[in-house]
View 1 (cartoon, one colour):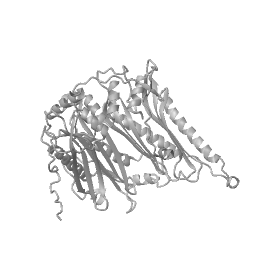
View 2 (tube, rainbow over the protein chains, first blue to last red):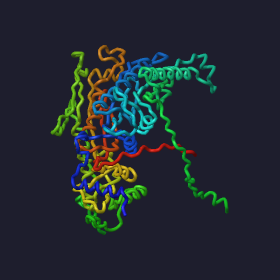
View 3 (cartoon, rainbow over the protein chains, first blue to last red):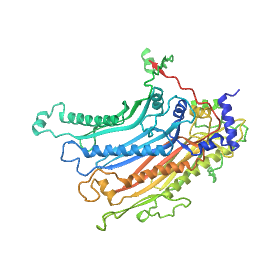
View 4 (cartoon, rainbow over the protein chains, first blue to last red):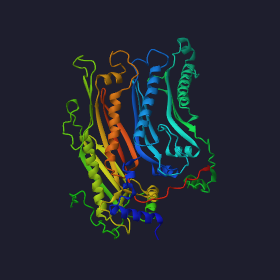
Length: 287
Length: 303
């Protein structure tokens, strides 16, 4: 006796063989859906009454003027500002594409970020999603306003919505700082010792403060309650050990009307025993 | 000693392996499925028939003429993306880049589509000869054979039969297998085929783009400003959108599921780029109304 899934497959292949298009051929689905979400992610969205709509992109390349990385110390304001403008432009394009596709927001965003000597490039690729018309999965009505952008996965979005929160925007802050050189006296005193290089530590702190403050300012301007899924990139920027970068990127969120809903996950204990490994060395020891 | 003869028809199925519709395949079948995928395939009521493969080797060259004009005529039938960028400075010197171009390399896209399409068609022909309803667990590869200016396209998957079902005029094909294919069927979809497209856009930078990428401003040649590099964004954006639209053109009213989206950029000279984008996925058709799945329960695992 075949399983219900097997019966379903047989019927589906029959439909395919008979040239049937099924409900996908109706006017409601007149525009082909494209998505880079996995079947698990699509199922997760369906469970809360949402569906993918289209692949969408946001791109930006901004120039960084010549000479800003040399003969100076402190923040490279031009690079930080080029980064901010590039994220803003890429995010805006992503939102416009989402709106044009009829989406309510973008999830599953892949971020490609490259900061080079003379330009910053950012590419955002994601899937626009929207509520299935007439579905009541999550019981959440999307707030009115422009489509949201995010760097959330479909799973993150599902959890967030079930908990009564709404993503609003992908925000990022960056700061690029060139640490001051040590004086000859400091260099001579520290030579041959493993000691903290306070000029580099301070530069990294300064970059962190700048980047985090910028990201938080964007959150405040969005009237967000907070920022989730923050990703950080820090360290030397690759054009000299004294240039430090700190990049922070996350998604602003806002509590919906009723506030936070407790998800109360169930605790489970796996009953699966670890697999015993055959250990040839122990056999040799028994001889 | 006799040498084995080479089959002149690459699309012909192996001798003694052709299926006979509803009958079982002769001999032991070959499958590219993992054991869990094989188990899921049986659970779906499918019978593996054999490993269907398709290969095509194409001559591969860039063929770019002067100022980006293609040395080969572009395929006709639709408008090719192109933009011209004009220097705002007036006559400066012979080396000054007075014009810039963004243009779609339709001959590159066409060559890729031909190679992929030939290999794909050959895989389906092999599956058809085995009496298969479809091909699951498809994998594909495109590689340049070093030094010979060729590109090799290879596509393979496991041909399967669905006992009791009518045979489609063309076997269905999908990158999915195992539990993901099971879930797809359980949600009311059926795989139709593979949808894939490559887009290719060449960008020849004009003076402003050249200066911006070198960090100097467009108008004064001095220390530049922080400004958008528009020509590059337009070229790369065109490559991404063209790939999406090429693949959408293959879908009809179906959907593209689980697409992979790979963007490449090659800096072919100072301020000159080639942007390419490859989109591949399974074309799926919704064939039955299925209740949306219940909201999954949330668990925290204690270890």
